[in-house]
Image 1 (tube, helix red, strand yellow):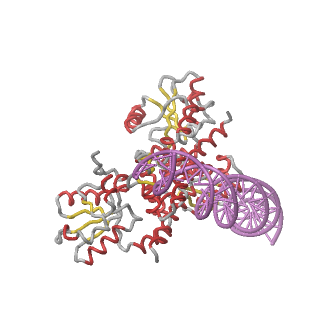
Image 2 (cartoon, rainbow over the protein chains, first blue to last red):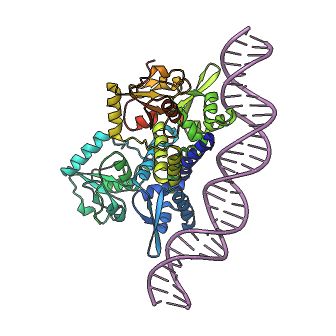
Image 3 (cartoon, helix red, strand yellow):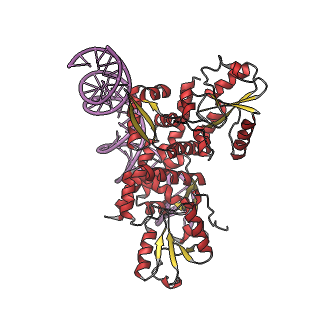
Length: 222
Length: 222
DNA sequence: ATAATAATCTAACGATTATTAGAATATTGC
DNA sequence: GCAATATTCTAATAATCGTTAGATTATTAT
């Protein structure tokens, strides 16, 4: 076979991955799936699209082998086909944040405080959490916490936070995280906490970012 | 502003990066640019497309801020807008190799020998090259070598190799590399060397892969 | 078996994208 | 200033993609 055609074929295959990540909704689905397995219905709801549209997008992601499907009773559950797919999402988002001024501006206007973590900050947060100097809360839905979470983090879904405020110590700083830099759950949680007199802040990391930085998660014990 | 619309905008920005890497020719251009700055004409020739088409693709890459342009006399030279862009290309290609069986098969049929390097193999290659036990040759065009190359590697462009065979020691193993796993220059070089009685093999790494693995390149001294 | 549910498939539309040709622009060398 | 060169812009067409509605499939509960 002619060398040029062979090369074209190789790039074509990689471009299939590129095409899969060229749609905003598919990226959102990937980010949600990076939090753990979900049914089509749940994915559609989380991404604010119809089940039909979610299904169509999932089909593309499946064709590119970025996700896998599994039947579970009357539902079909999707999951990422590997941890490298979550890492790809983090890489894409990071490159976008680094080079697209528009995105940087949009994020600055959304989240007033700079909250990006570097290797040193992550390690020191872990230390403080271990010693109990800060309380790290995971404000995602409980199922996502169960699938994997930051070490020493407590599950405190943003929807239940108001009723469960009493569980949090008033004398220590609360550090909230959620799905990642684009997720607004932790911002909502911090607003509520501050309103009730707590010292609280959020971090940009979700579990995909934490893992991409080479740090361990606490995995489920099945 | 409504939270849903704000989120949509964020994913839209990231999808712009995705769109930029959703075309085979644009990926090929990125891979070539990962070897150093090039003019539109050179890029078009390397990627086997018309200058017009190359220009159109470069425009998309520029809009996504993955590349930058600079006028140099009567030419316009393009370069990647950062090392993270080369890393993105490596990540995409790696995810594709990992999950797309079709790509794995295509590569196996192209390159008989498994030649993938892991952290340990890379380190030991570096050691052997340092001690002179193997001769590492960079068979890319000289300009690409000049832009950055593996430590202890000699420039020996595949086009000049036949005339310069005498420069290579017959008693030591020759290790050839080129632009990366999709590039066929090193395979061509190894075939020529073996034909002339040399012990030669190639490695899959190009400078982008080497750098993405966290290892240092020898940069130009301007 | 049958009804109910979850998800996909098919078909269709309008909106993008890739590619090419021809015109236009900017720079260099004279 | 003028001709030559490198690149981009404009316009046009064919191909592909996103989205929706309606029909279909596979499973569970009765």
